Length: 150
Image 1 (cartoon, rainbow, N blue to C red):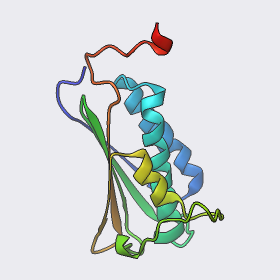
Image 2 (cartoon, rainbow, N blue to C red; image 1 turned 180 degrees about the vertical axis):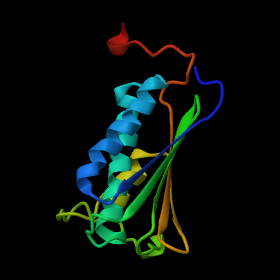
Image 3 (cartoon, rainbow, N blue to C red; image 1 turned 60 degrees about the vertical axis):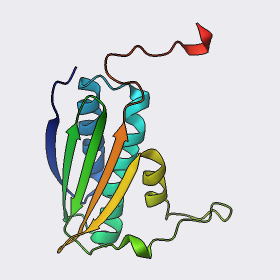
């Protein structure tokens, strides 16, 4: 059980080949804290989407951009910050995808908003800060409900 908030940081380049490392890093932190794979999976996918957006949009596909990751973990929730230093992004310019007209790409922000409890994009002097918060499905100290009525 976590008595206080745990803070972890990781810096990576905007190289999609390194995003697997970031996903494993986050999954490991959550696993050590007792999050189930089910609880962690949404957050891990959201992190991957935020990194992909930094690569594609902030750095125009370049693999040498800086991405700083910060995880703040408590017993009840995780807060993830993904900070890039590329082209800024204004969420007011975002248009949700039309799911009745499927197309390739453009689902990152939509997915992040559905996979987390809170999503914010904060324009910075240089780049963008993406903030995502996800609460635990089962609070620490509570037993998990039985499956199938067992």
